[in-house]
Image 1 (cartoon, rainbow, N blue to C red):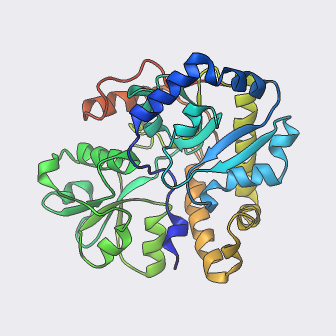
Image 2: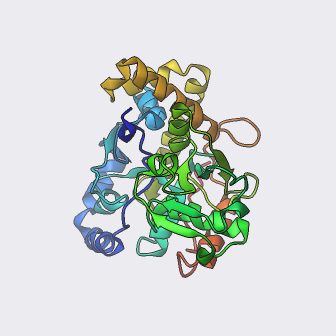
Length: 337
């Protein structure tokens, strides 16, 4: 099984804030001003999708293949990032106008040198980060005295870790935190760690396919989340609000079409990932899609991309309290209706 093809695209390497900040300086000095103007006048809008093509991006593939962007009058292209590329580097340089990224990482970057970042659509109504525990770890308090594998002390995976410890009332010194990179499944199944930080539409799917028994422990309150997952992020003033609204609506329409007919997602993704023609890969993709599509639904059971300002306020307070940021940015959301 090619686990790389299922790598969750929302985890990033170091944010490289200094590099991003220097790029922003160039933009502010006028180097990209003309590009911003021509974009709003009808040239191609580029939406960044992180790293490896994956069925988790299927709403974008479907919106493109079904002509939803085009029908909205949007000339839009999708661009996958290189593996060594910073999450918001192309956005800062004006090479992208929108990026699909985890909202917590956007907030951290906003607090660290990109104050004009704005999330204008929340595509995941539920946070995907979870703790996957083996053996007798049946709840988060059971992490005490156990080894916990984390990708690293950065990004959405680390914020998931801190949220788990916070919810359990545990300090970092009460858990054996081990940095294991992207080897969560191997670490858990071989007993290297007692638990790992993962995503319920990625590592959990792989563990289930392998027949390995595990306990999935949620770290975020579904009604009052202190972390917000993937959404659409832009820089304030780069695109008119009406265009942002049309992009968000097209993605939402694609989500609803996939919910009604998952085959649309499989076909559109196969054009990006030819390996899905293989039965084993297709079956795996179906399982990832089933897990991912649940994130699109709110507690009311309906898909939505609406930004909930209270959730972002709560997230800013949490990230500041656990020391990820000094203080919550004044504003990191853009409500487009």
